[in-house]
Image 1 (cartoon, rainbow, N blue to C red):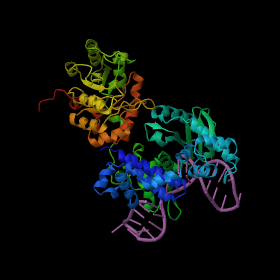
Image 2 (tube, chains in turn purple, red):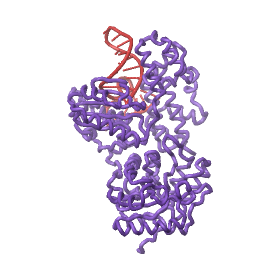
Image 3 (spheres, rainbow, N blue to C red):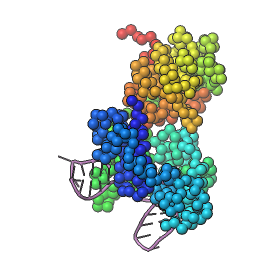
Image 4 (cartoon, rainbow, N blue to C red):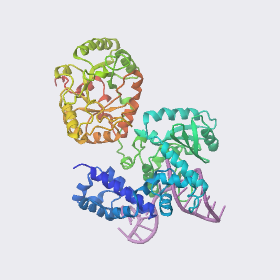
Length: 579
DNA sequence: GCCGTTTTCGGCCCGACTGTTTTCAGTCG
């Protein structure tokens, strides 16, 4: 059975929480439903299985009432309370909360007083001046709601990390021009290296926070100031991207950075731990019961005070990292210095812009020991894929570069097409002569689940295929992943010793953090590669590295963390030294 | 609604900003 019931149950409890909140029920009941939803979604096991085993209550946040609702759902397919609330509340009412500045109270007010059930109706009513008469609302509120609707329409979708990072760096560069700024950092999901970010968080340290906030609002990139206080400001750039700035004094830098990096759930967990110790944690530091403060100049101080190992930002999702930090069993995450080479780059022999020598020199300059040139194969005609003959010609150039740059090594490889019929684009005897084979799907992307999964499984069973390239096929914001049975892919990867690629291109990030964590848990091997078509793209390895770290990967799970001889022994179909 | 080597009842994460208020509620991160 799949994990679908976990997802469905999580969404039912979330909706339940939203509807109860709208009706003004106890906030703690609402929080309880949301917490349960989170834990159900992140549970490593199917709740249906847990229920059969009578172990539902072992899931944190699931008590008597929620357990019985889960049972209700699993036996009848419905949750009566959820259905009842749905009848009282047209679905459109919940959608009003999408407007920035409109929460449950306002949404419910709009529905109760004016019968409004859609964003369009809110806009009409606001323009007709019908909102200002409502309790607690004046002209300003009406204007604010109209602005919120405008933001909603303009709000760009989440943007890839690789796009947001340069924007953030430009903003930091601008802020460095403010004389009152002492320290600067990015924070939020950008610092946690989520594959996509919704906004950009920036924090600064200064003895005069107000001066920094004012300077920030006047940066040339800023198109609109949404809010501006003594220590915080929110602005929009031309393209609608939202930037949040927060400023505090030096002695609180650690707690500020920790607070603003999040995630929200991670922070809530830390504050609960603090309370257990009789402390209250905020961005200002720890407050003792007597009102005295424990300041945290550095982020490490926050974790130290809570008797936790330092938790790297990439792990802060309240997905088990706090428990692991307390029990001193955090993973030793793979780092940049661990990577000894890039196992997926193209050259001018197919659709690359840089030639083999340039790629190799750039890789060597980065401190790598090797690089695998993996040009496309013939059936990907659009990328000038290699025929067997041209592959042979390319070999001469690779050997020349190897003589030149020794002991640096260029591995002779291909990114072989997994064709729509499931066969590979080059015969086995040709693949056998190559140092490294990446197999990728570029066609038949819309095939049904069993068929496309079968193609990848077949590729992994080929004794010469070392790595599956960009395994899910996702292109962020453009293309959905293939309909893959990823659990089956993981089993086969472990069984055949085939590595799964973490493709570092910012628009791919495939595997992503979630898949990496599953792969690590399953014991599959990973390869962090860039898929570079030009030397500049070798830098993108940092994004793939970030996905690996977010997925709790240690160096031992990543094949390109070892030196060349050890790498050979990790690849398939290589002659092994006699023991 | 959940939870407990300080509790089976009484807690439950913290603070800034805004607008409509004359002390606070709603929203957000």
